[in-house]
Structure formats: C-alpha cells, structure tokens
Image (cartoon, rainbow, N blue to C red; front, side, top):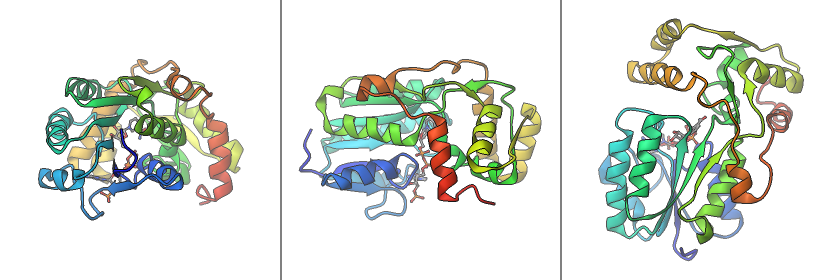
Length: 274
Ligand SMILES: NC(=O)c1ccc[n+]([C@@H]2O[C@H](COP(=O)([O-])OP(=O)(O)OC[C@H]3O[C@@H](n4cnc5c(N)ncnc54)[C@H](OP(=O)(O)O)[C@@H]3O)[C@@H](O)[C@H]2O)c1
C-alpha cells in the first residue's frame, strides 16, 4: 500500500465516506473523493465512470450505494472488482452490512477477487438518526418500524471511519473481516429514550406491521426503494443481529463509542431541534 498515490474513497460525502476523507486529509494523505457529484465522477449506475475514478489509485474505500442488501449489488461488486484489477488497485476496504445475504455474497466476491482486502461488516449506524433516513421520524416525534422490540448494537460512523482509515493505511489489516458494532444492544424504544434524555424531546417508538410499513413507504418514495426497505426490514429484524461483536476492539485496540455519547454530541449540535 502506498500513501503517495491518492486513496480512492467512494461515496465520499456519505456518513462514513465523509469521515474517512476528513481523517485522511487531516494527516496529509492524498485522497480522491468520489461520488456522482465529484470530478471525475463515480456513479454505481454508470460503469463508464468507474475506470476514470480509479486511475492512479492503489487503495480504495468502497461503499455501495444505496445498500449492499439491494438486488444487483453482488453483480455490481463483481464488475467493480474486475475494473479495479484492470486499473491496478492493490487493496480494497469494503463497507458491508451485518446479517444481509447480498452483503455476505458481495464480501465473498471481494475475498475471491485476488485484490487485497479488508471487510468492515457494520451494524446499523447511530448516524441514521441524525444524518440518515431516521432523522425525519425523530424530528416528527415518532419512529415507526416493523421491528417489534428487536435490539440492535448500533455502531458509530466515527468508529467505522477509524477502522477504515487503519485498514487503508496499515497492511496489518489485510485479509481481515471486522464485524463492527457498538458496545450494547438497544431497542428502538431504548434509542428514543436515549435521544429524549439527551435532547429533551418526547420521541416515541411504535412497532408498525411490515405490510403497513411497506404501504407507507410506497406513498413516500419510489417503488424500488420502498420494496428494498420492506425486504431489508423483513430480513434483518428476525433477531439475527441481537449480539455485539468485537471488530472495533480487534482493529483499533479500544472500545467502541456508546450511543449515549453520540446522542449527547448530536443534541449539543442542535440537529434534533425541531
Ligand atoms: N446506514 C446503515 O445503518 C448501514 C449499516 C451497515 C452497512 N451500511 C452500508 O453503508 C453503505 C452506505 O454508506 P453510507 O450510509 O455512508 O451512505 P450514505 O451516507 O447514504 O451515502 C451517500 C453518498 O453516496 C453517494 N452516492 C449516492 N448515490 C450514488 C451512486 N449511484 N454512485 C456513487 N455514489 C453515490 C452520495 O454522493 P452523491 O450524491 O454526490 O453521489 C454520498 O456521497 C451501504 O453500502 C450500506 O450497505 C449502512
């Protein structure tokens, strides 16, 4: 791995990508931030953009957007690794999702590609509640999901970025699969209580039956996205992810950040003020 060539960061303005770019820039590492709005652009839906974004890069952080759980992700990751091999990429850090069949299949494509790799298999991000699709429900005071009282070990995007930067810069992380979670399991009702305590809000959690959730999503967004959210919730809210893992500790030798610390910081930033 070389730090003299730019590190390619895909989905560079995303929840994880933006934190990786900030860390690399802060320590003087050359970065090529890539997304649909950069120059050169990188668009997962336009393979013609992939090779120009790679030129000169030997190391890359790869986040597939919208999500590795969607149909077609495995084929896209396979085609991506072919491009990466052709352009001389030597090491690829893949952001993956926990408990998702297509994410695991995508990991296997990367592992078999012949390119050096580190896999970061993440649980749900804390930042979904402040920078993602669950911010609007927080602001509206009601998080309604088909999750019963399932628990999730929410992980902080800052921890994921720390693991990714370590993997991008240090060859000792090559060949590793880090399953990164936060330090404790929280139900969505627990999350609402943490947000309320930190921000003085009165957010509630309510279980919404899966079909009702799907119908609501269809009224709010395009059908493929609504179908994807339906399938994702059906897949991951069966209890499979109700355990913590030690990926942050193994990669960084420290404990992961707790949701309470995240909630205090977001509350202080004013993002949750209505
Ligand atoms: N959120 C979670 O809880 C969670 C948990 C585990 C794993 N993951 C994984 O994390 C990844 C998503 O990461 P994230 O949440 O950091 O993403 P995000 O914040 O939603 O990322 C948005 C970024 O993706 C870019 N983007 C959007 N569409 C694109 C396209 N067609 N081609 C290229 N770039 C595109 C956007 O920039 P432009 O608009 O400029 O293109 C922006 O930089 C997914 O692979 C998912 O499987 C997420």
